[in-house]
Amino acid sequence: MKEKSLKMPKGYTAMWLVFSAAYAIWMSFFMNFHVLTKYETVAQRTVDGILHNDITGMIGNHWAYPIWVIVSTLCLLAFILYIKKFLYSGENTKGGKIFCLISLIFGCAFITWYGFFNVREIFGEEASITASMIGLEYPWHFRMWGVFTSLSVFANTLYMYNRYGYNSRLGVILGSIGSAAIFVTINCPSAGEDLHLDSARCMAHWSGALIFAALCAAPMLLFLFKKTREKNKKFTIAFISFGVILLAMLVLLVTVGKSGTIENIPVWAAYLIFFLANFTNVFESKKLPEKETVKA
Image (cartoon, rainbow, N blue to C red; front, side, top):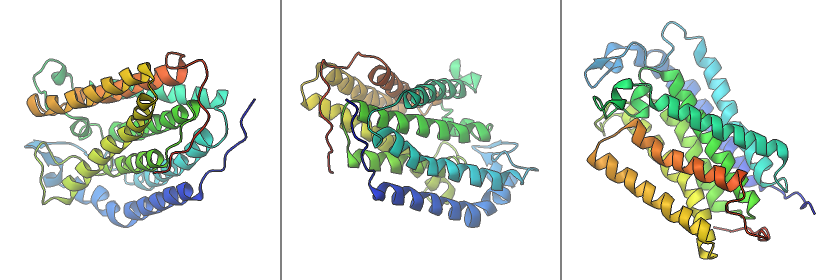
């Protein structure tokens, strides 16, 4: 029997309206000066001694900026619909399943393709190229990287919550903050390999990226931990494996150095877990638990 639709808390809508409004104001009255003027100077386009042609993708095409502000703001507002559709509309629908599956496949394909843009990294000649630094040469691709990754991870997290009768307010809030944070990073180009703590550009870029990585992984970890406490062996294996992969990535970043390929490892792992959990019966028990709400 199909479950009765749940009422989505107004707080989620208010939260995303605030995020979207703050972003639109920031982009319209502050970042427009940086993107259309400051980031076009030779000094700003020179990173680690390398002069990049156009780190914003808008030199000579300033008309694209207001369009990007509108489109990206709409992308943020769409997260309200994701919460309502995938977490508060009763059982997952066929249309929702198709949307999440397509976003998962496309997101995985895109970040993999994007991560190998710099061929030198594949052969080890320049192993320190990150997704952000690739974005200095391919700024529009980097923007799409942020949009597609946040969308696919957030939507599939909610779909997974709904499918297995789990609903964590903490998970939704953390995932929302993380997803919004990447929109800061993709609008503030990388300032190079070294952290420049006195640079607003550097701090905004790295803060957004770290918040995105940590808070978008947290909702999945909360879910897997809950299933581990329920003595679900398959989810326990997934929880431990994902944790080991996150730890391994940190070790590689410290020992090997920053790399777009290394950065992709936990995302690939998350996509694999999403695929198995959302679109196969690998993790399913004979009877799924009743829906619950975890207040945290």
